[in-house]
Structure formats: structure tokens, C-alpha cells
Image (cartoon, rainbow, N blue to C red; front, top):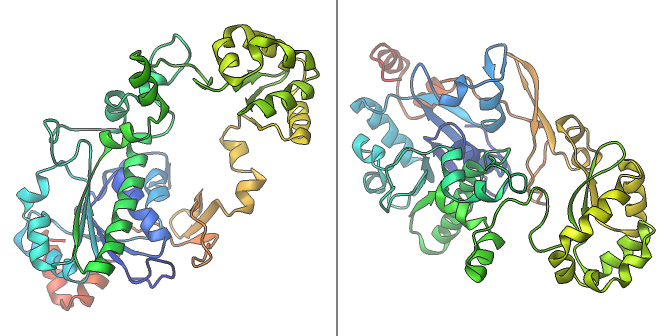
Length: 398
């Protein structure tokens, strides 16, 4: 495998995952220096290799979350393939999978089996509902857990229908919690010498990020409803129509309220008793917001941004992807990176948001692997001969 430099330099990860939650986890680990080897099904590979959009028949979706990894193919239903897999585990620090619970036990490669091969292995399982509980073996996708976990019930226009969050937060939050779990287990192993079994559920992860929605229900007994862009307990803290587009204005405390009123040239609003504190503004939002809407419509978004920047009132344009990818702040922080690939040329994608003085933040990344690209190299490193490898191919083992 390619030698990397970062806090996880020397950590080897065997990646049995596919689609999004698992691959995103291992991309985070790879960005932090880990050596990640994807183990994929011969012929088809990770399901997301077949998801659009495509560039010269290469999935942009797959590419964006599998950069910097290596790929081998193994038919894990085959006894010989499992023998090869166990040899890989002997060299690894972490094994991660996102199968439905029970699948790896049927295959004979679950945590109980792998720790016989390597006692201090860290085994991470990222699934829809986790490895315990009555829903454990239910199938799950991102929108299933968004719906079941409550986030869709508080997302969308006020008094409107439930709306899916515009990115796969069910998968991504589970991925981030899994990466945290793996990092914690690696740290614990340094202290104790022991491996670990990590069980992260997408549904659990959705509940964990609901923050004030949970507290509001516990306190009031009333299930929160969608509020559009409006914050449930801070006012004004939402989107407004300007003369030419939309702007987010976030008045997060009473001092900012005073500065905001002066900036919009309506100082008399400061003196209104029903608006003098955040609690009162939130309680009287239905009276306040229409007043502000009429004012904000008077100028363009750029004009308001210039005004608010002068007085340090938090505000932002509502950017589309074109503007996001040309944002000077994101460009300055190397958040748009690229990989050079002989199949598709230069592929641009989101960079690593974890900036560290011990981690090189290169603008050009190692590309995503072709299916099985590193199979021969890895097997040769494990001691198999080229003749063995040819036999494995012939027998559908790799």
C-alpha cells in the first residue's frame, strides 16, 4: 500500500463497506493518513460504482467518497477467499463493514472470528439500526432513518409536508460517529493493548444530532414542527427575500439585535417592549418578521451583506453549488481538491475539513481505485505466487 503521512500513518484499514456511510468513514481515515484497502465483490464491486453521474463510465459518486484507497476483489463466500481475507486481517489494525447485522456471522468473518485471527483487531460495524434491538436486521437507507429518526418531521416549510434533508445526513452522521469510534478505539488500544467492537447505527446517529428538538419536546410535550429556515428559539435567525435573491440573517443575541436595528436604519425597533429580548422576539415572531421582510426587500443581497459586514451582524447569501465551489474562503482552505485519473482526467471534489499542523493538506489527492486494481500487488505481498493468483481468478475467488 502507499505510504502516507498523518496522525494515522501506519494504520491499516480493511474496508468491507459499500455505498456511503462506510466508504465515507474510511475516506475520513484515509485523509488522516490511514492505508485503506477496499475488499469488493468480483465483477461488480461497491454498489456505488454503478451510481451516476458518470464521466467516461466512471461513477463520480463513487469517486468522490473513495479517493486515496486501494481495491482488491474477493468472493467472501468462497473458503479460499476467506483464507486470503484472514491473512489480510493479520496485517490490519481495523476492519470496517456496513452489512446488515448477521451477514458477517453467516460468512464466518464476524468480530468473534476475526479476533481469533488478530486479538487486538478493531472491528467497526456501521448499520441502519445497530447490532441489538428489535429493528436490528431491518433494511435501511438514508431516507428511512431520516424519517424514522425524526429529522424529516422538523424539516421543510412551515405548515408544509415533511421534507428530506438535501444531503444524506443519515449516512454521513453515522460515518462521522464511526470514524470517532475507530479513533477512540485506536487510542484505547495504545493504552491497553486491547481491540474493540464498535457498533454504530444510523438511526441512533439521527437522534444524537436532533439537539434542541429533543429538549423542546421533553420540556413542552409538543412535537416540534417544520419552521422553514426560522430558528425555533432565536429571532430573527432565518432567510429573508432581498431585492434580488435571498439572505440569511442570524441575530444571535440582544447586542446583535441593537446593532442590526441600527444597520437597517430602524432604531425605533429597539424600543419596542415586545422585541427587547430574544425570548420576546421569538414569542412575537409573527409580528416582527413581516416588518423585517418589508425592510430587507428594499436592498439587494450584496448591499445588505456590505452593511452587515461593517457592523459585524452575521449574514450570508444562500449560495448554489456554482457559488460554493468558487467561494474564496473555501478555496483558501483547500476545500476544493482534485485527483488526476487516466480514465477521466482531472476530478474535483470536496477536500478534508480537518486541518492539522501534523497533516499535509495536499490539493491533489490519490485517485479512487479501479475495481480490483491492487489485487495482484496485495496478494503478492501476502506471499501468493502469480500462478496462485491466476488460479484464483480462474476459480472466481478474486
